Length: 262
Image (cartoon, rainbow, N blue to C red; front, side, top):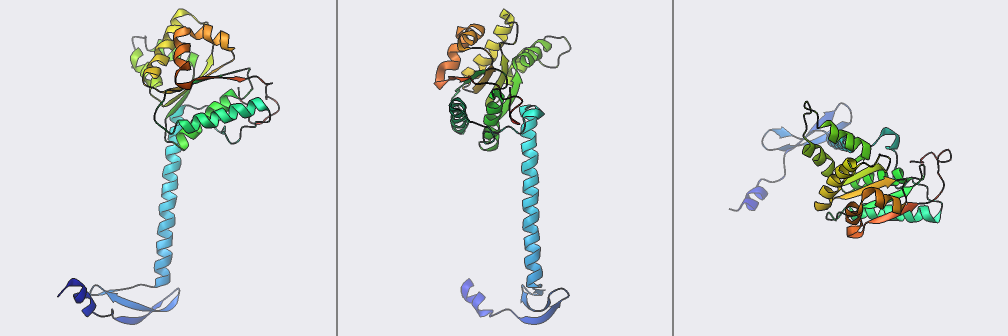
C-alpha cells in the first residue's frame, strides 16, 4: 500500500463543535492524534501578528544597520539629510552635475573600477551635497562602504600615528582610509601644501588607485591649481578610468537654499 493510499484511507479528520470566547462557535478539526484545531479567526490574527512582528524586527535591524553604516561613513550630522533626490538643480550646470552624480552612483553598483572625480567650486555651490548623496546611494542601494573626511583630518591621523603611544602604525591609518569602496576627501588645497603633506596624500590615493577604489575630491581650486597642488603623479591617476573634473561654477546657495552645502 502506498503512502498516498494510506493517507486517503484515513478519510476526513474528525470534527467537533467548539466555542471561541471572542469569535463564537466554530468547527474544530482533529489532526495528528489528539490535536484539535483552534479558532480559525484567532489563528489568522496570530499569524498576521507574527508577520507584523517579523517585519518590525526586520525594519529595526535594517535601521540599525543603516545607522551603523552612517556612523562608519563619518558623515557630519549637518549633511545627513543630503541626497541626490533633494538636490535643487535649477541651472544647466547644476543639472549636468546632478546627472553626473546619478551616473557615478549607479556605476558603483558594478565591479570596482577605481573611477574618481574632482568637484571644484566656491563654497556653498553644493559639492558636499552631491558627494554625500552619492555616498548615501552607494551604501543604501548597492551595499558599498563609504567614508567622508577632510585632507587635514587624514593628515592629522597619520601624524598622530607617529607618536610613541599611538595604538596604530602609519600603515594601519592609511589602510583605514584606503579600505572603503568610496572615499570623499574634502578641502583639497586648504593645507599648506608641504612636501610631506603631498607625500601623505599620494600614499593614500595611490593605495586606492592600485586597488581600484573610487575617490571623490572636493576643492575650491581651479583645474590648474588642483593639478599643481596634487602633483602630476596623483592627477594622472585620478584621470584614469574615466575620472572627471566637474566644475561647480555658479553662485553660492548659502542663505537661499535649505540644502545648500559647501
